[in-house]
Amino acid sequence: MPDLLWDDVRNFFDPDLMGALPDVCVAGTSVEDWQAVFDLVRSSGWTWEYSEGRVAVPLPPVVEVLSRPADAETVNLQVWPVPAMLAIFRPMSAEEIDFDVDLRELQGQEGVDVLCGFFTAVGRRLGKPVVMTAEGDYGNPVLGFDPAADRVVLMADPRLS
Picture 1 (cartoon, one colour):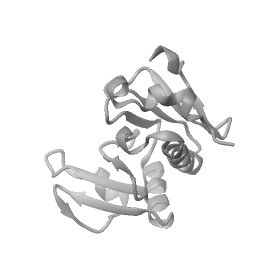
Picture 2 (tube, one colour; picture 1 turned 120 degrees about the vertical axis):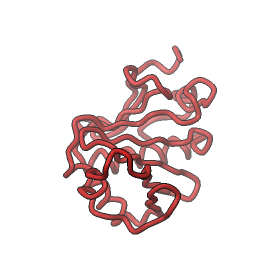
Picture 3 (cartoon, helix red, strand yellow; picture 1 turned 135 degrees about the horizontal axis):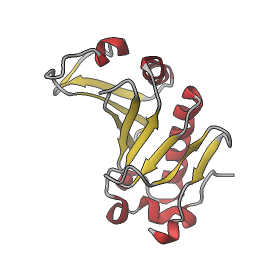
Picture 4 (cartoon, one colour; picture 1 turned 90 degrees about the horizontal axis):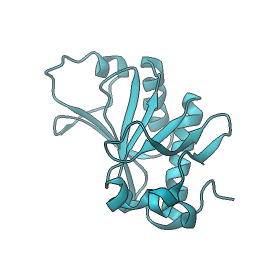
């Protein structure tokens, strides 16, 4: 049985309500947690590309990424868990793992299932909650992976969105 049903969460997947790129966060992280995400990406079979500025380069150890000077080129780790879904990680701080997903790619039950599977993979690897909020609305999570429940759960009422 799926973690969430499309009919129950369709408002949380509406780009007009949530913004096309909702914010996803794992708080209270460390360099080791970031390295665990890099290792998950490498070992998962997902397609990925790491870039500094607009140049694709090999994925370095995360300690090198997080110790870059403040004025260095922006880095992105683009991950495609499935061909139709892109997650963009932006390693800027050891204390928080942030990434975006594009809701326009995640419509219908299949999109919900792909997102839940991805959140679950990241959350299980880290043993931490993975929380999604509307774009720019960091204090109000709508859904996310709950390590205690070992699944993705609702964190807000989708009928109120």
